[in-house]
Length: 143
Image 1 (tube, rainbow, N blue to C red):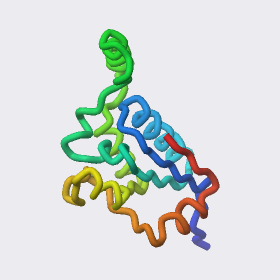
Image 2 (image 1 turned 90 degrees about the horizontal axis):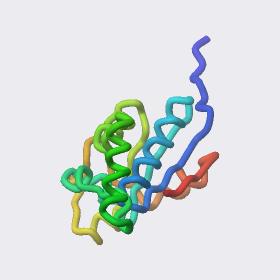
Image 3 (image 1 turned 135 degrees about the vertical axis):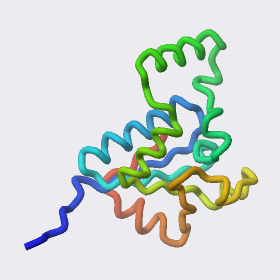
Image 4 (image 1 turned 120 degrees about the vertical axis):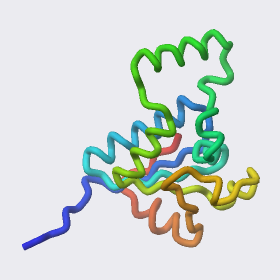
């Protein structure tokens, strides 16, 4: 008998920021949950929409409210730890089965189109997103 395996948890992650460290934490959390058997959906809204823009994804800044030397020290440490770049992490999540959604409202607010989105990101359907993803989730996380 071939039964479909139920995911460990159904997880909704909302990323509302374009600060690189927060985006990185959201994506690493998603990857850990996905690899533990959870079904993961990541929704990028508000300024988080910049994290899924083809040109902006590689220009995200870590700790923009801190002095430049603090930003540089954190970036250096991340490089020493050989952590993946945001774009590679996003692509990995897509290929490993995460659902990546962009907020349609924020696409318009930030002057973007669906064609600006990185590989694997689709526009969320506001008529079903909250009911089918957020309310149905075992866990809702926000970054």
